Image (cartoon, rainbow, N blue to C red; front, side, top):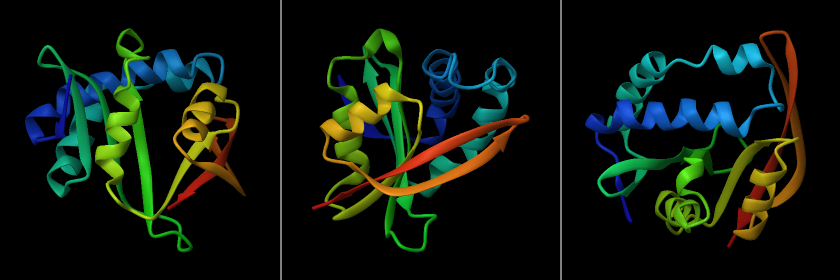
Length: 157
């Protein structure tokens, strides 16, 4: 296993991991229409724009991208840093890749937030295992007519 900073050539693989993990991790948690609308092509274009800015890390097994994490300045005014995304293919899960990706993406940041779907028990447990705690902030967004509630987790060192 290798964890390294992503480069733009990783964009298609990062996009594929994101779409595949969304379709498995969020099945039953998000409307089927939302999951079906996920497109590797659209996500590739997005990651081609984002990766050059830094903050995106990939996990490789046998030179294949099996996970990624993205982090950077917080979108919330009361937090300095944010873990935007972390996804690992189910076939590679349970091997410590999520922890290694998080460690690489967050470095020594002393105050970090992450937003997680309130019904995503597996992700919430993961964040709690690595030191995050729900901080009482929530938000609700509409996605293709479905109301989705997210819970904010925070880790302070």
